[in-house]
Length: 303
Image (cartoon, rainbow, N blue to C red; front, side, top):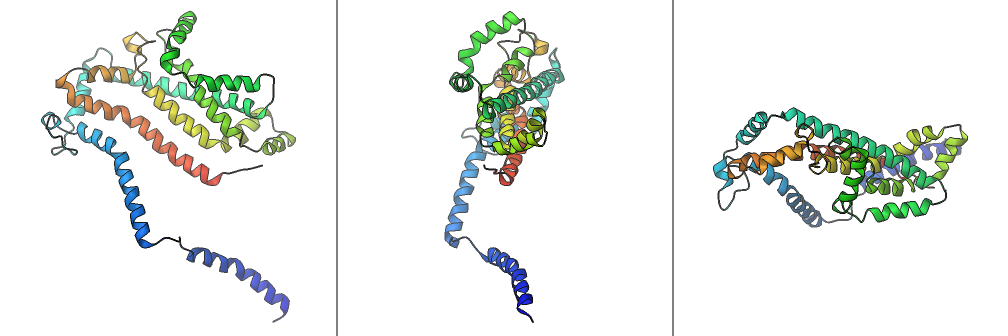
């Protein structure tokens, strides 16, 4: 065999040989160390899951088990009576359950979509363009994060009242668009996006909208998926009692909490209320978390 053929054969075998070495390589940990590591992770997982397990278990307990002392963690005679009683109570209201549900879903969906669009576009301009007052505006956004909703509630009410939006869906949706947390999160993440990638797209003739929608947004997916989680949790759990007075426009959370405050006889229904209100935020979080992890594993662009 000639020297050239031997060299080619070695070059072909080297990647296979390296792959075998990578497969055979094991973490430098002992079996005992692995055992205690997984034991610790299991304990942390149980602690984190305990409130959720207890809430679901309480919702499945009959009324006599809810008042047992000491309380049992798991239901001994699980039943769905609390949920059926809850929907019966909601059915007796002059505003139907479906109406409350529609109000909450509409406010959450429109508010989250608007927040995502406004925060993303604003963050793109702040992160990738220089203009007078750029840094000053971002400092104002950062300062705004220090104030809770209770501090800004009165000025918000006065402004919304002047605009004639009190007792409408927009009194909850529009303030949701301007949450400073979303703008801050998106801006910080977009700053890590290579400017050379955007410049290359513009040289190829891409428009500003094409750069934003086709290049920037797919590469900052972890940021806007996280933004969706925060926005959905905030809007879904908003009682809207301060700005909305009409019963037919109130949210599901408000209606559920009215049932929850009905006294001892509605303790079981109150436990069921907690589970119903947790379902959507937890489902959104679980779905978004998998997307975030997948995107983070496949991203990492650098200048």
